[in-house]
Image (cartoon, rainbow, N blue to C red; front, side, top):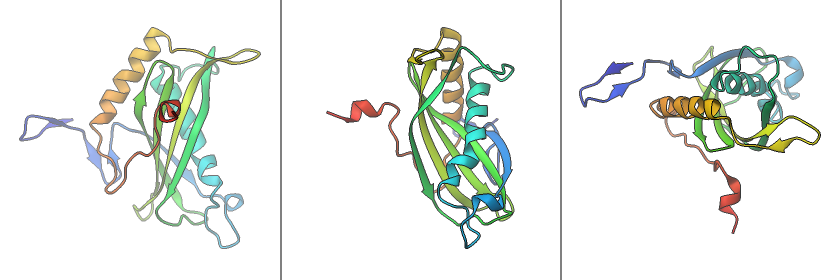
Length: 178
């Protein structure tokens, strides 16, 4: 972080955005491509899944756990495509926490072609905190997890979005339905 002239704090960044965001690397595998060698549309969700789960565990303070008593259930996923990603492309995935309430998270994953620097796509996901069991049950975050998620979301608010890109999903989609 550094102070800028207006007295506000600017987060350290590089070509791919804020250095405070969780980052992970991947490669477009042949099995993920269509007959033209492009990343198949369904595999955008596959290639971000590990980054999504790992970043949530990190932000929840559970990165050291193999499995916790709670997990997440994806409620919504939205993929927005910008540029083709071809077989063999080196990817850089950056995850940010856009929002959190008592039992939901809104995560935004940017998929960059690390070789060209281009933004290939973004994937937004909202998820619900669930207690593991039979059956699983939606539950509120514990106080410590809630505090940490809110701290991370506040930090990520200072990380600018890629140019021309905005979030499109609501944290709680049920509030949109009348």
